[in-house]
Amino acid sequence: MLAFSEKTEAQFQELVARYPEDQRQAALLPTLWLAQEEWGWLSPETMRYVAQRIGVTPAHVLGVATFYTMFLTEKPGEHLLEVCTSVSCCMTGGRETLRSLCDKLGIEPGQTTPDGKFTVRAAECLGSCDTSPMMQVDNDAYVENLNEEKLVALISELSDKPWGTRTKLASFTAAGDRRL
Amino acid sequence: MAFQKVVSRHFDVPNAHDIAVYESLGGYQAARKALAMEPGAIIEEVKTSGLRGRGGAGFPAGMKWSFIPKDSPKPKYLVVNSDESEPGTFKDRKLIECDPHSLIEGVIISCFAFGSHQAYIYIRGEFNQQRIHLNDAIQQAYDKGYLGDNVFGTGYTIHLSTHRGAGAYICGEETALLESLEGKKGQPRLKPPFPATHGLFQSPTVVNNVETIATVPWIIANGGAAYAAMGTEKAKGTRLMSVSGHINKPGVYEIEMGMPFKDFLAENLGGVWKGRTLKAVIPGGSSCPILTAEEAMNLTLDPEAIAAIGSMAGSGGMMVIDDQTCMVDLLEDLTHFYAHESCGQCTPCREGTDWLYKIIRRIESGRGTAQDLDDILDIADNMEGKTICALAAAATMPTRSYIKKFRDEFVAHFEHRGCPYKQAKVPAGAGA
Image 1 (tube, each protein chain N blue to C red):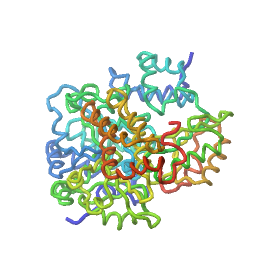
Image 2 (image 1 turned 180 degrees about the vertical axis):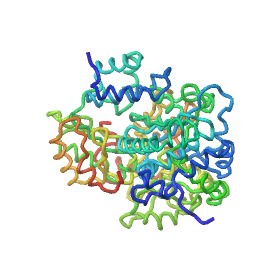
Image 3 (image 1 turned 60 degrees about the vertical axis):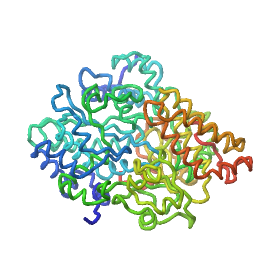
């Protein structure tokens, strides 16, 4: 039987308290996020566990989880690389960047490398149109103003990092033009 | 009154996201002032300012607040829409990164104005770093007693938390956002009833954009009349523009309503990149009908002027397009977006957006015929006004405009049996 770690359980209790007592279902999306960060993806077992914790049916959780693109209901590689290809990025090299990234990893968009290290996907607009081409790494950091050098550096940097590494990426902070 | 920066006034101040720096700039004085006012007077001040919603629809903010029933026994909610997903739009992201306390201060004033004690900021899942950054600012405000059960020692309660989305454009539509916040699929609701009476948890709810709420503190501090003194007669004040595409200086700019596009392009954006010529402009996000270079160069940037030539000011997400861009390729990318993001609830949208994409993909790849253009317009007829929300129209309106204004490019694809421009190496949305 699954159970949240002590730390995640504390976060779960804190977030449930944000919503009215009779509206516990409102905590579903944030709880799915907790589960995904704990176990890396949302397996059927994980979704059943979340359903039980929130008090909704597993079918409802499955419906919600598959509606949103960031919830991973199939096991991805250790690192998820999502290159934006929407309008602005499409005009300024997003697709070429996606192609180049795939070529470097020897896969096609939507696939995972045979060693299970990287999954590459095209993403719809990530709200970083002024710093295109860009990608999001592991549903978290943005790597912006991409070029060939940065792609190579990013792949090399991530190759050494196991799943769940939350340290800031050197290539992200090097982007520099965001005050974060 | 001469133009001055309102929402972007702290963008260039280092560490304005820190509450100490924000307060040294006069931050949270407007909230203190507001909590000593009659709530009705705050709403009047915002009405006087003429502030309209900055998320896309442009509904007057003060009027929206006044729709909240005063005598309802139910709790009232403020929900800030930070789902910012319209392609070309990234202004709210910049605002949260540079000046999160102006948003929090706006939340405090707005909640007090219409009697709410609970606010949520629904932030798109991709903006994870921004959410963490905003959470830090919210915690600072709690620690100071500016949020919580005794706001500024007045005994008034306001609780605020962020709520992370998970990747769905449709959740920018206010009722889809509310569904998502309630832990469901983000599928828009039929209106009426409107959120003002039946919003979050079926309670009275105001849904406002980040920029709208972040403008409120300035209005309270300086007066609605000072805000209304800027802009045009109908479009008051200033707004943020996120500008991207083929320009030298992409980024977020605050402009006075009614600024000529020509000046904006030359003075702020540094002109079209690589010394190329302007071909077209998307004025306010990907859903807005496209403008030719000539239309754009004669345009002033205010909602009325943009509507007069058949487009929309939208979310201020402007995209500038140079003369080496294939408009069919661009439309293929755009329709792929809407096909991917349709929530699937209404058949005309679910099927229609997919057909638009497939047919335009066929034209771009050189296998289209003249009949395709008639089919596209016929499909558009069968989508518009036949769905619960505006996503279907958000796909058909630009599609119509591309065909109307750049028809010769579509014809060139039929004649060349392919794209006369450099073929993109990867089709739109491969592997999405």
